[in-house]
Image (cartoon, rainbow, N blue to C red; front, top):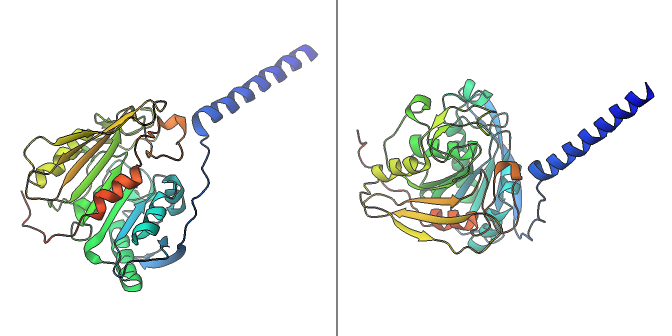
Length: 334
């Protein structure tokens, strides 16, 4: 009996060691120290529809007279604070340098009501009006901080990237440009939005070795098993959709970034569609990259795939979005 107890304790100890090693290897990711920031994080809430919604806003110390506004949208089971730490405070540091305002709104019960029909969380099931919430937030920051209404843009990762797509699809009168990360446009079988059929400036950033949002299209689920979110188009087809709306017909111009980090197992290139009369469309592909946010300071858990360290995604996104201005909307296509 004692021998069996010793064996059981040994097996339990071994399982605990394996769990610790697995957690350390696949889940744990050390967070770098926050950079020194000159501005202030201001928290607030507003009534949107039947709900009280919360948000945080980073206001730089040297704000432009009529600053641009960047909405940074968190991923599933997250909040605005996690969007801030998950992008390693990079947008705050850029705001300090360039004088724009960064908003980190909170989704409903940790999620955004994006355009995927299959999403099972409350924001989708209850059809929460997140477009209305973000409109109201932009209007409040226009009133309080003098935000330039022609320079409102959005970015987000995963569920936040899907919400950025929804803004472009349904609110092209609100956003001058969007930058979805780790997100593919829902396909027709999984599409649950109203298309405005208007061109919008867009930068799509995806990794080719995605364990959640398949780069080549298909079912969204972690390693094809957990968290079914329905089916999406490939990253190439997502970019082609927006390029077509913008009237770009020629092949894109391509640029490969220097492989500055040889040990991250990935490299990046960008395809830019600029030949048509509509807004620019860009497709930034991280070959070997995962469900992660490329950056020079930290990494995501290994279970989400590789984190590229050749490019700073925040800088690439802001460089793209900062030059966008809201255009008068042309007649709808189709």
